[in-house]
Each structure stands twice: as structure tokens, then as C-alpha cells.
Amino acid sequence: MEFEFDEDQRLLQRLVRETVAKSRSQPADQLWATYLELGWLEAPPVELAIVLEELGYAADPTPFLATATWFAPLAGRLPSGSGTGVFDGTGRFVLDADRADEIAVLTRDGVRIVTGPELGAARADIFDPTLHVAHVEVGDLVPGIPDLALMGLAISTVGSCRRILDLAVAHVKERVQFDVPIGSFQAVKHKAADMYVAIERARALAYFSALTIAEDDPRRGRAASMAKAAAGECQRIVFRNGFQLFGAMGFTWENELQIHLKRAKAGDLLLGTAAVHRRALLEKTRQERERSGPQGERSGPYRETSGQEGVVTG
Image: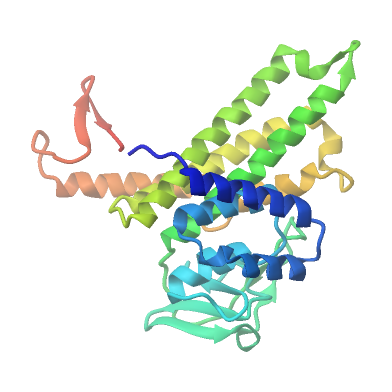
């Protein structure tokens, strides 16, 4: 499956970048009103991914991510105000649950919509004080994470990683040692290149996930897990290299880098780390192989490669 942005999508990308750049210094409630007025919450999956990537790049302080990808796919509608969803079976670390107007809860009896004050979520104290995460006490919860939620976290994490790379590149161009910018050193170039490759890989998988959701492709579940895993692996490379290129000052409160480092790390931890989704993908593969019958009679995406069993994706 090949995918490139069409003219309308490129125009949307430019519009979102310009809007976020101009308004990022505004309070969260004003930003939220701007997003609602522009209709970004109503964007289809691919266009929504475009918006989320740029909001991730800017470390958006609003509940847009939770409303668009946690509440909406679970409730089947947009909330009256802001919203989030509880669907991992535990109710722990629910994004924006402490400030959502409506919360969609996945229980054994189906999806139940409750108001935020009714649920009484308690905000959790985490390493990123700008991120709203809360614990929710609800009985009869069952796991059932929407593909859109995984895709949303993945592409938002990619946006954060893009910002880390841009900040690191700008820094190594300005920081001088031995009378030359440190960006001229080969070791520094290699670290920046590794960051770029990881970002582009995760970005491609996140948009592929958005496309499978938009087309209701049967691969959407696998694509969402692949996107979340790739984003988690991406943030680890970008976090490590970006922090090292900046040095210790990159994690000081005075430096913008620390905000995006924390957002990227949170994006990996929420709804399962890269390792969790890699294991889930392996389990899906094992189950599909068991259903496909004895060796030699397998069909679908499996084949023999160089004497060993291999998996061909796509």
C-alpha cells in the first residue's frame, strides 16, 4: 500500500503548523476554543493524524488527544466539551480523566458515558507535570483499546521526537568546541542521523495505521500495534541521543527540551510500551500460524525464507 499526502492534506498540514506556531503561547482554554472552531476534532483518521503530529510537536496542553482518540472511538461521537476513555481494564493512568467533561467507560455491559465530576477521577503525580493523567475507580472494566487511541499516541510521540531532533540540531550548530561547531563532528552527525531514521520509520507506520483505520482495513489492529511499538522504540533512541547532544542542561527546567523528552517518554508508557506491543504482535502471529494448519499448508502472510519461517508484512 503506497501513501502520499494529497494537495488538501498538505494544505491542512501547513495550516495546522502555522496556527499552532502562532497560538502556542495562549492559555489552554483559548487553544481548545481555537481547535473546536477550526473543526479539527471532526477530522477523519489520516487528517486527524496530521493534526496530532503537529500538536505533539508543540507539546499541546489541551485535552485534544484524549477527546479525539480515547473518547470518540469508544462513544461513537464527540463529547459535549472535552472527553476521554477508560478501556484498558484497569482504570490506571487515564489521559485527561481529571478534567474531562465526559468519560466513556468500557465495561462488561458495554460502553457507559459518565460526566467527569460524577466519576471523581484523582490526578496522578507523574514525571511530566504538564500532562494530565488520572486514576479512575470503576467496577467491571474490560480491556478493549481502540486502534485510533494507539495511533493517536504513536503519532503524537513522533511529533515530540521531531521537536527533540530540531532542538538538538539547532544546538549542535551553535555550540562550539575547538573553534568549530560540535555538529561538524562525525559522532554527533551519526547520532542525529539515527534519530532522523527512527522518526521517519515510526512516522510511516503511524500514518499507515491511520490509513488502515480510515479504510477499515482488516490489518488495522496489527498496524496500530506496530505503530505504537515503533513510536516507543523511536522515543528511546531520540531521548538518549537528544539528551546526550544537549548535555545535562537539556533536562533543566529552563530548557524547552525537557518538556518534549517527558512527553515522548509518556507516549511510550501510556497504553503499553514498545515491548508490550511487540509481544502482542508475536502472540497474534503465533495464533495465526496455529490456525493456518500444518507446515507447508500455510497461507496468507507466511512463507519459508532461507530455511527459517519468516513473516512478510504488507
